[in-house]
Image (cartoon, rainbow, N blue to C red; front, side, top):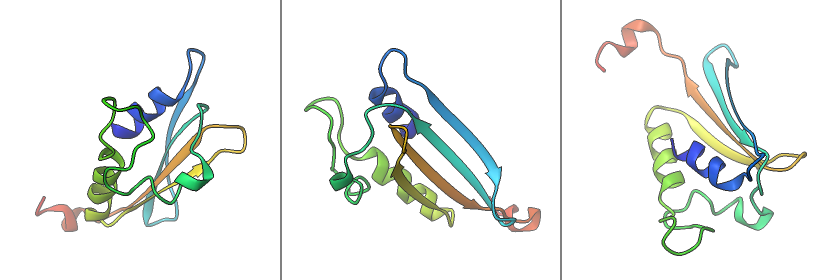
Length: 107
């Protein structure tokens, strides 16, 4: 949800958010959330997952959303990364392992 809210905040009235999912490689699901908004400054790419880091105006963000999202994804054995899109905007890639049915029985 946080990725969608951040994308929405980054786009203008005619902006676009794209969500996709596919199996890649055979043992993982690749999720992508991308937008054609203002993007992420190169100097901020290494900081965006740090707790309390935000580029939003005071009162509009706490800087915890991406940090919490990263923690949740990693607790499920996955990874998350961000990159600038060549055509503008940003893309977040999430890789989550696919587990066999018997491995999920305890959840």
